[in-house]
Length: 132
Image (tube, rainbow, N blue to C red; front, side):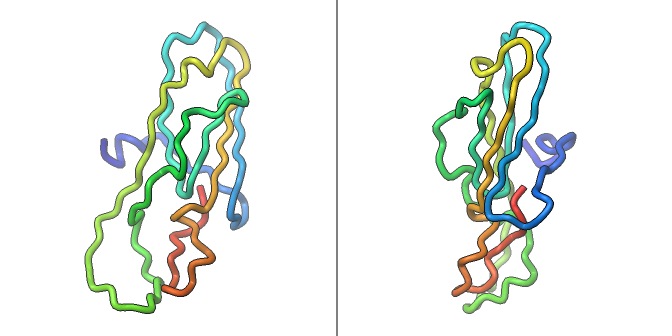
């Protein structure tokens, strides 16, 4: 899948201020029995998805590191003369077993991960931006 296929109708959620970690919560109402349900999720920073208080999957430190996008102000302490391809990984989960008829609560814990690196200063500015 390409960027447009995954993110065409998506909107990024982010905290109102720069944080190293955040919790996002949303409620949805389902008015029928859930037979099949999938969610595609991406976090710029590591994330853990919860539905109705249950952790979805057992992944750790996802999504994987990539060169997310250009960082013109890296100010590296070493020469880096290379061109990079940029990508963002998204994960897809089968979530039918987590959902039920009625009110459902989705929660996502997002941490800085590789995207929002504020403590790694020895090499230069490795921060891509705020978590979302």
